[in-house]
Length: 357
Ligand SMILES: Cc1cc2nc3c(=O)[nH]c(=O)nc-3n(C[C@H](O)[C@H](O)[C@H](O)COP(=O)(O)OP(=O)(O)OC[C@H]3O[C@@H](n4cnc5c(N)ncnc54)[C@H](O)[C@@H]3O)c2cc1C
Image (cartoon, rainbow, N blue to C red; front, side, top):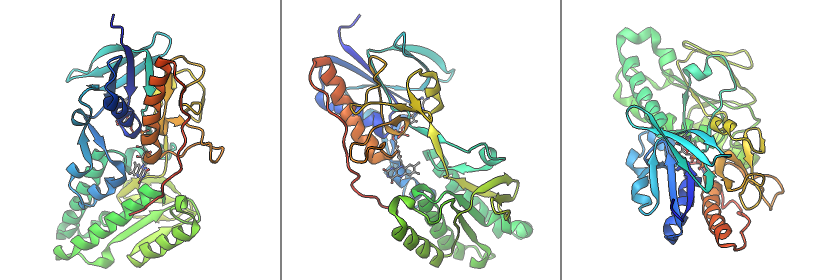
């Protein structure tokens, strides 16, 4: 058996990858570090909507993990099982999805979040999501396919559902998505001889009083005004209640004739964490200020899947890339400190600012 300290990082998103980059930078031979991630690329989610709207080429927002971490092992595959008693993780990969067992001394949970559909009828089955590169490409393809189909005379009667696009959720992801697709569709329309602006209906459904609550009321209402000026219809204090073929039902009873709902209205922690018996709140793993799970030796968590105390507010850090990437660096430093018996550093970060584009 190797005398190195084995660090296993599950997840190669903002949290996991930045933890790996810190180990990469230090190149300490005492550590053998492995990152497990489903994809072999790092995805810059803040610009995902620009792929959906064809503003950017996809190579602008993905970076190959293998290029970023050359001195850290990378396993491209799925995490299937986590056993914190045996200190083992079962992963699968390959065309036949066969399994391997990886042992560790320190385990970093950075598995992010998944889309939460809240069990609403038809939503999980019919809505598009905006979380992965595949989601953005699928949405872009959908927009183009609907324009092409709607332009044909044979689909004349189907134009209302084809040309009505609804986004649920007025947070960053939803607002940026609706703004991007609105611009994309209106810019593309002149090239379709049978389509007119008044046939387009772009709708944002948001449960709160004003959109972009993260930015405060003044900026939220400003963004609302700007979007309306550009032709977006906004339904505040409203939720999607159900989705059926060519129909989206809202909580106020209104039924929108549309075959496209983009769901950005909720996330929940990665369900694989249900397999990890440790303190949690609403599925997120509770860690102390040093990002360690106090009751489990060698277990650390960060990013969207963790509840990280925020010393500035006395609450928890928000699930953002800004936080996850900085937590990644601190978790690596604290694992190294714990092995060398040095003092650990509590995580502290003040949001630099927020931007909706
Ligand atoms: C559309 C969109 C826009 C956003 N815009 C912003 C923004 O402008 N600013 C900001 O600060 N934040 C933004 N965020 C939030 C930000 O992306 C997250 O807070 C951040 O990614 C969290 O980092 P993480 O490492 O916890 O999770 P992630 O970055 O999601 O990484 C988790 C990784 O784990 C992998 N994984 C999950 N399950 C498994 C499994 N079973 N096996 C193997 N691998 C697995 C995933 O593939 C993923 O690579 C946005 C998010 C979205 C979806």
